[in-house]
Length: 176
Image 1 (cartoon, helix red, strand yellow):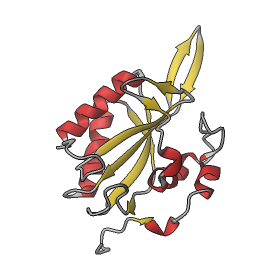
Image 2 (cartoon, helix red, strand yellow; image 1 turned 90 degrees about the vertical axis):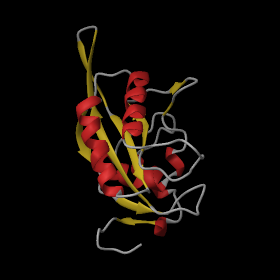
Image 3 (cartoon, one colour; image 1 turned 45 degrees about the vertical axis):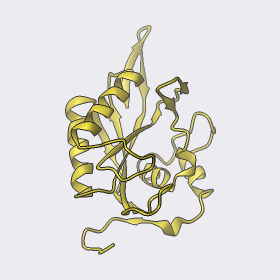
Image 4 (tube, helix red, strand yellow; image 1 turned 120 degrees about the vertical axis):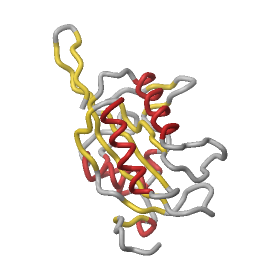
């Protein structure tokens, strides 16, 4: 949760980020991203379990590892996006094909109850309500968080998602 003072009143803002990787040592990329977020973008308050999921969109690629984290940051949404994109680049992310394989993907899912629609940024993430790989890990750490555009809790949004058999808790010894 970010904390801001507005006219002398402390305001708490929950910032949730979704992380995903399906290239190389996927778990190491998630951990490295968390380390860089801590050093360059904000303090991690909580982390979900790590989940393994089938690829969405371009399905002929390796499975993803996904995680959601909550952070505290004094960065405004645009500055946060810029920092996160620099972290992705440091970790070898190359934007070559939409929905293609990637070392790391970091999305801003929620920035408090803000609704932002600009050329560079859409918050809440427009596909979050349709993505099991976002909602299930988010449910681990913020089940009662209310989606600002949908006006529903994460746990209620999660109940509407089909195909829950396409995501599972990540186990390092599982061969997939």
